[in-house]
Image (cartoon, rainbow, N blue to C red; front, side):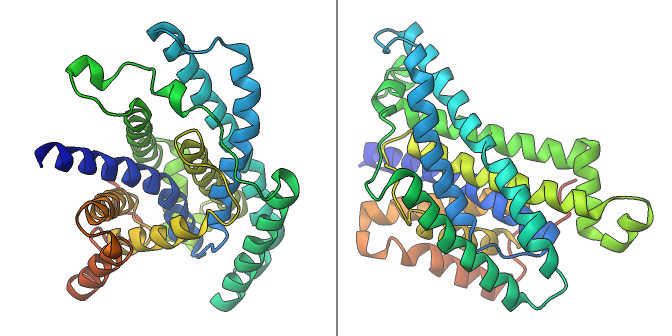
Length: 310
């Protein structure tokens, strides 16, 4: 019983960190640009497909992991491949913001929803054209599990999950540092809090918005890449469930709140895995029940809105 509780809690934390990588991009875009990007889930799926191609090429330069040293080398190469795959989403995000999103900032929200929904459908066809309709397996999961982690403490748990949690924690730490300490991050926060004032002191809102959208696309793609190098395959329409759960996450944490997205993702991840353990039919209902409860008690979410990082 205790062992099952620990394993399912760890599985929930792993899923929560994956959700955070996806939701962080969504909440950044909403917090600064005010755009609810329905195509965000397909950017996540695109990252999963791109890493399939990149990791297949990159791992061809290293030996198969058959000892701790070669396993660590293999893991580093796979992580670099995941970052490169996510980097492909940077120009994609910048292009979407510049060409499609920028002209409709001043229009009603329904235009944003229709536009991003259209992009969602286009991305599905693009991925079908590029990689086909058959699910793809990057084939790296068993190799990543050769990296010694929990075995050193006498506990058996997939090393890939531990690696994904550490990467998710590093992503959260970097985002907090970026928006709290870096000059560019402070400019983005200032633009989010008071767009007119930022423009008055010489900030280029066009460049800021493009940067923010590209960052959001990057983290969505990185989340997809981290999933695809694990036990899951890349398949068409894989972005729907993470997109819906990402909306739940940012509502729980607070629309546009980075810390809220982090806490909300872990809550949703752990609850969903506990539900699978105890009563699988409520796996999808459990996160929504928590969201409804928080909306009743604290409608602005657990951490409020953008600008809370101090």
